[in-house]
Amino acid sequence: MKNKIVTPVLAIMIVAVVLFGGKALLSGTAEKNLGIARNIMMTAVLPGSASFTPEEFDADQNSAIKSVYKAENGYVIESTAYGYNGDITLMVGVSNEGKVTGLVVEEMQETHGLGAKALTNVPFLAQFLLTGGDAEVGTNVDALTGATVSSKAVTKAVNSAVAYVTGADTSSSATEWGG
Image 1 (cartoon, rainbow, N blue to C red):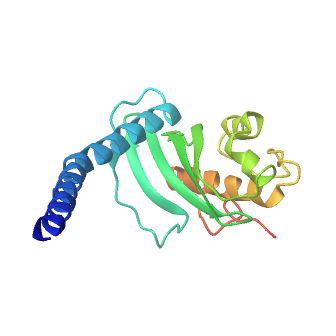
Image 2: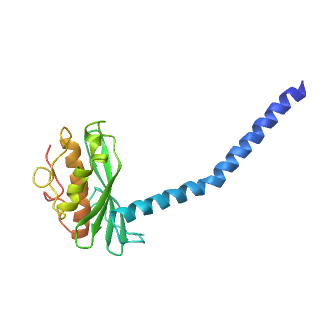
Image 3: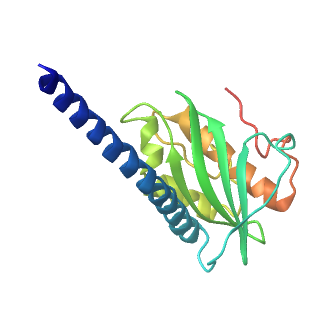
């Protein structure tokens, strides 16, 4: 009777040790891979840069900015704006001259088939590269059909990133949009 209980308990303990040991060994790998993926993404949105240094910033000055990385030829800025269903987070490359060099939507929970198009719609996202850092939905950026709120949120996040680099007043219409 004693062996019938000891053997399964011992097996469970061995499996638990193996699982916890494996998790401990792999935890650093996951973090390292996340850092590599982040650097690849930053290189894509700010071409010509190889190293990115985190930069301190005043979150009170521009609440849309979540993180800032300085590179040789500009900045990579993680910026967030509230869309239709929640926050939309972008990684935006901005040259030292204040021009958008690239952007990628990192996270969003917008409506599938409508606002979620902002994640993958290349013509929509490419407009920000052509506006010269002066993006405004309805003026020089065409909103996605059926996704005006999401389009405006992406525009606000991009404009906040550009405003950080150029020193524009974030309380001005450069980063604000109406309902």
